[in-house]
Length: 249
Image (cartoon, rainbow, N blue to C red; front, side, top):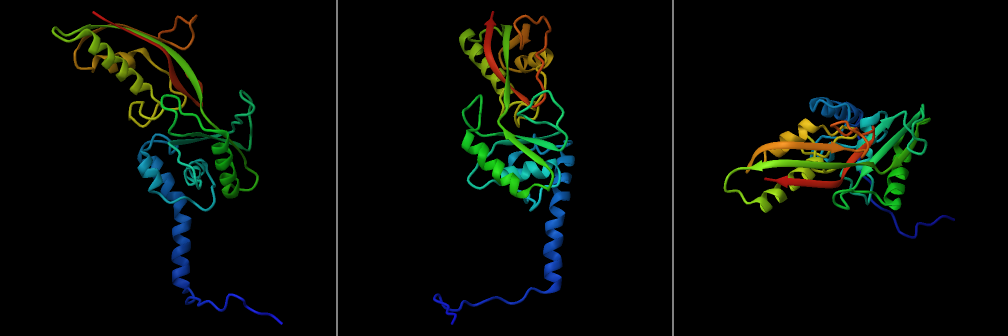
């Protein structure tokens, strides 16, 4: 004989056909809304879009494209991500090799400052969550970002009456902020993955600092033996400042 030790529980009214169709339409439109969001910002990815707008968009129940995977990564329970970037045909475990059917999702946490790097546990949580929402046949790899170390040397002439020591600190802070993985880049949403550090851009950032009269020199390199005035950053990589020298005259 069967028994119900917890007793009967009240149910709820059956869902109407119209309500079910409306709910289905909302779930199906999630993909289109994410694509529209990235297109509205001129991106093919959610990376570079304000985090509040990403979190404000619904996560799809099934990830069928790269922006879906990025949004689903943000929805990982117990995880707070600053950024997520999905790369098609890339296997982070096998660099420099084609990987058809593989998508690598690079996740960036909030800490540590200046060079945020996910822990192994965080990566495992995101990987398990994405595995539950991916399409059949897609291989998912999750990893933290790689960092290209850049060395920067700049010389500036100060406006008359400006304190030399204070100006040096302000210029250094402006440079680090511009290259920061979370606050850097032209839009202030984090230095873009794979974006080279150009000398002319850096000079413009320095020149905009109040108290700078003239930028007399600016050098940036990712290789001590490279004479190129710019620093090349590989796809999927962010930037960290290995050395920074500012001379104020």
